[in-house]
Image 1 (cartoon, rainbow, N blue to C red):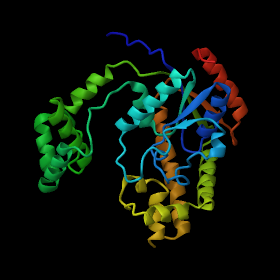
Image 2 (image 1 turned 135 degrees about the horizontal axis):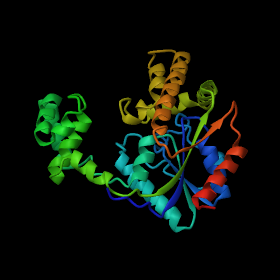
Image 3 (image 1 turned 180 degrees about the vertical axis):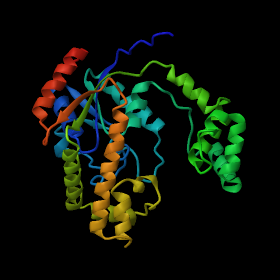
Length: 320
């Protein structure tokens, strides 16, 4: 098997569960190593969704340029492919300026897709083919469309449920527009070299209880900062309750509270629970990579120590 060479473009990546201190460490390292931050958060891309996504404030950015924040409206259908296209342009721009790109965020799929060099079959949610397939799905149903997919791409069809309408339509769209199955496309792109050579640092707490406490405090702070008003404003703007952005943790529960389905206190506790569950899933994702250098906090983060250790790792990596 041929050895895939490492790319020459070196970047820093900071990952970890929500509320683990990624933003602050990214800013401190950017100031120390002439860097700029590229967000890898699937909710901070949306304009007007600031409090519930824990989007960094101007004060928290501390003069460091941040990219991939506020790049889409909440009603848009924002894909991984679109994120990679835009984020890669940001990273390449930072590199061209002789600065260090620091990709920081908790959306593992965004991080992995950006680093991997993987390409995505071109598509547009507004294309005539997409509309044609969606109309066909509405008329015939998921089971019939999945059966149609099985004739062209049995490998993908075997992995999908008849109710997984989005992926069924996408797989049929790729096949009809390229003549290749989505399985073939994915196999071909996996053979491509990585897009960037990344030093990845992971943040977490040594004791899970300390992470849970930090998550709970963050949710309480969101409520104190005016999350109810933010949700009201989004809904009053005409944003559908069913759009992807409003299904995010925090927005979905507080929308239900505003609709009278539960009390505000019940919504607050549910957000804490679901955020803890999300943090577990994030850790499961990020722990798959054997190359991540984990920095484990005690009860409280020590950013001085983390900055020093990160600088040592960057020097070993050939940066700084």
